Image (tube, rainbow, N blue to C red; front, top):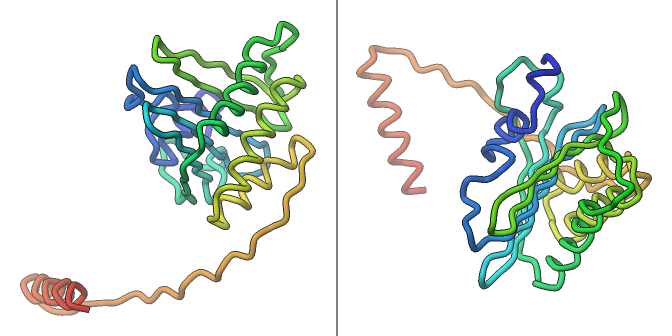
Length: 210
C-alpha cells in the first residue's frame, strides 16, 4: 500500500465500520473515535458514543496489518462492544478534551511508533486531527481509552490487539488465550447446475431445522 492510500477512511473501511466520521452520528450524539496505527501490529479503532439515554463503547481490531496489503481491501477483524456508564463516558471525554486543548501539543507524524487519527462530534459539527503519540496529554487520552476498553470488553482478539497497541505507549497487559481456529474442509459438489442448486437448497433447509 502506498502512503497516500493509507488514510483513516481506508483503514476504517477495511474494518467494515465505514469512514472515520460515522455518518450515523446525529445531532443528539456525542461521539469520539480513536484510530490507532501501530507501526508493526494491526490497526485498531475505539469508539465511544453517548446519546440521550445511554453510552456505549465499541472496538474493532484488524486480524492483520492493513499497511502490508494491496489497496483497497477488506480484512478479517475482531469486534466487541458494551455499554458505558455516563461517568465512564464523561471521564474519557475529559481526557480527550485535555488532549485537544493542550496548548503545548505538537501534531507530529513519525515513521515508527504509533500514529493516531481522532474524530469527535459535539452535536454542532465534527472535528478531527492526526498525530503521533508523543505529547503527554495525548498519551494519557490514548492510554485511558485502551485501558477502559481492555478492562470492559471480553473478546480475546480485541483485548490482545489493544494490548499490542498499548506497548507503544509503555503499558503492558497480559495476553488472553485464543481458541484454535476450527478446521475447514472444502466440499466439492459434482453434477449439473440444477443438481448443484438442489443440493444447496436441501442443505440450507436441513441447517435451519438443526
